[in-house]
Length: 136
Image (cartoon, rainbow, N blue to C red):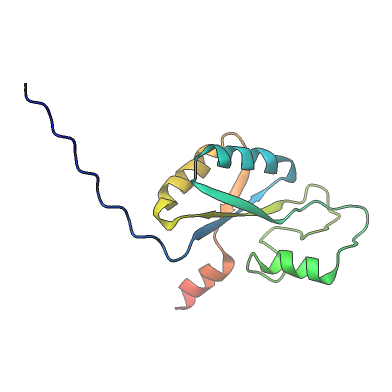
């Protein structure tokens, strides 16, 4: 039997000009596990915490801290359902920003869907992006 010739590798995809991102609302106690599982998927993406959702007894945040954490997720009052950084409400949800390559959006969404079996969280799009697509 004749030996099969090795297949030529397909040309690589052109590099994207910008990253894609999603937001996740999660309990603060699950952030470490979320990061651990995301980092276990080699180079799929990374996350950053926009709003810790953990409050203390006093609200000693500066105006700069409150505005910076809330406005990054696209709404003036924080993420939908979020209570804001420094909130005194027990069980306030944290907001994470998940950044990944647009070429890997399908893989990222499948990974996040599978991770829901381990950690309870919800994924949502940027409120600004949703408004821009509905207006234009």
